[in-house]
Amino acid sequence: MRPAGPLALLALLATLVAGCAKDPAPPEVAPTGNVSPGTGLAPVPIAGTDHTVNLPKGWTAAVYARVPKARFLLALPDGAVLVSRPDAGQVMRVPAGGGEPATFLSGLDRPHDMVLATVGGRQWIYVAAVDRVVRYPYTAGAATAGAAEVVVDGLPDESLPELGGKYGHVLKNIALDGDTLYVSIASTCNACASDTVSDPIRGSVYRWDAAGHNSGKALVAKGLRNAEGLAIAPGTHDLWVVVNNRDNIIDPATGSKDTAYVDNHPPEEFIRVKQGGFYGWPFCNPDPSGGLRNMPFQRDYELNRDGAAADCEAATPVDVGIQAHSAPLGLTFVPDLGAVIALHGSWNRSKPTGYKVINFPWVDGRPGDQHDLATGFLGAESPWARPVDVALLADGSLLVSDDFGGNVFRFTPPPG
Image 1 (tube, one colour):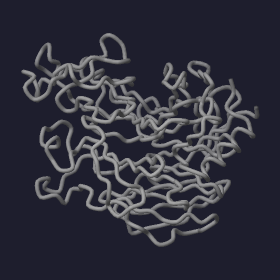
Image 2 (cartoon, rainbow, N blue to C red):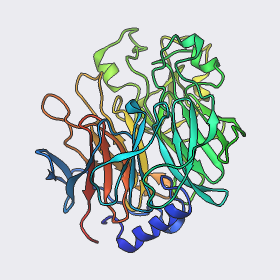
Image 3 (cartoon, rainbow, N blue to C red):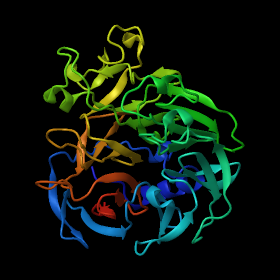
Image 4 (cartoon, helix red, strand yellow):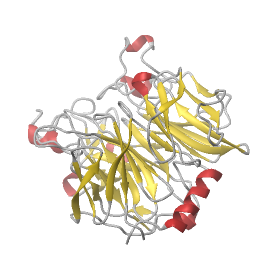
């Protein structure tokens, strides 16, 4: 099945205007197809580069914009695309159709994730910085952001006295569902018990009132080491996240860091977040030995060897695992493709993994089997691009940001 045609995509664009650009909801545009590109990919030259990428048959590829260290994306109803640059404290605006980016907003501390949503009868662009979430009124065609309103303040960063200036995963990610704002507060470390007793708890997802005033704070779930991609599944109120799991784990059978074990443990996670859920980190690790769905948990050898720190049998099951160390970042729901996820790629695996875009077709409200959608970013010796986020354009094209090469790619399906 091909990606949705123009009418379906125009319907999707209308829902973005009415609600949340990153989390489209109406069931009439929900991803119901079963696209499985898998091994049917073929090399496609990327216009504007000397590289190729592997895509499904009939797709084309080009550079949409060049944005140094491009991170998260937000496609706006007026055709412009926002691109975050946390290192520069900027959000850039790429005009409709691509081209030269210009500064849309600056002055925030490492802005990262962005969502367009209608709250209180007005459209807002929500932006997550490391210490707060702010919003700006959306105005079609505006070249720069308007006046900022602080929605949530005082989010933890490396300025906390107990952290000594170090916070391993300080960038924040968000999603909106109606009047609820979800914020991922990632861990400060690879694995540490101190994050589990902090206020707010780190390695978690919290919610606030989307209307602002720093109100409505509540813990949703914990045990999520670094949830980067947050999105609401279409036609539901279900929050799904992809999680970067821990590194350099000790094999509980040997008590040592065996390369073969570290390479494949623990899996990254694709999770439907449940209220009150505990997803293991840092005391329990999902065990993929019996497959990557609904995995049982093993006690962490370093932090929970005797089971005193946490009951791993009571941990909330992980819906789907992804190859360990793939580093899933952006998560976007796309008609006919289901959940599309950018894998940033490994740094501590003996054989590199990730460095691609994958999709899980959506079957009866759940992820189907994982398939490759775009590969070829990893060269013989090193990557030439590292995917971060995925955004959908009105014509069915997918934009993929690359913070390594400083590109935003456009992958366009054939007419259908």
